[in-house]
Image (cartoon, rainbow, N blue to C red; front, side, top):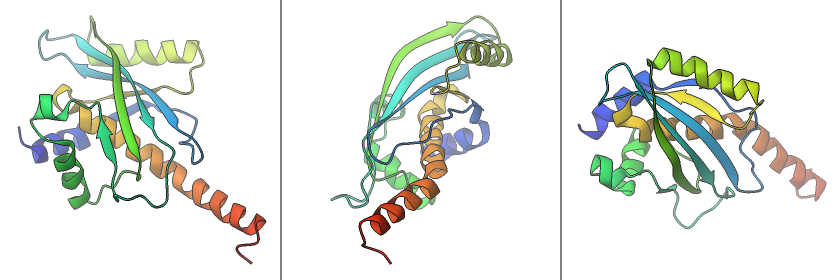
Length: 179
């Protein structure tokens, strides 16, 4: 499957079932734990559960290279595309990740015996029961999981942008750099 097909599948099928509450930090590294659910390609009626964490390095307004650096998404292994190719692909479509290092680590891949709809309910309830406000629960297609995670990251960064710009301006005012 080519990148455009994968991208379209991810855009159409990515669902943020239960978002995290905390915003992305503008002053430190941010850990974004997630649980990604997708229908199993092997066992019809089961759900693949991918638990992982994306670490966004402390954002920077100016970087030597003006785009994100992706690690841990298995792009070359799973999709046969380099991270730079994927970043360029996204830039052409108007999707820009924050200028920072995006490192994904998959902690565990498991199978939930049951359909995706049931897995959504089970995992949402588990997160609610332990009052986990840091972990995002999302669903999508198994072959485009990387794009689903990148969409989740872009949405988190976008959600934090207004607050971050206001904080920067407030800090500059406090220092007397703005009137």
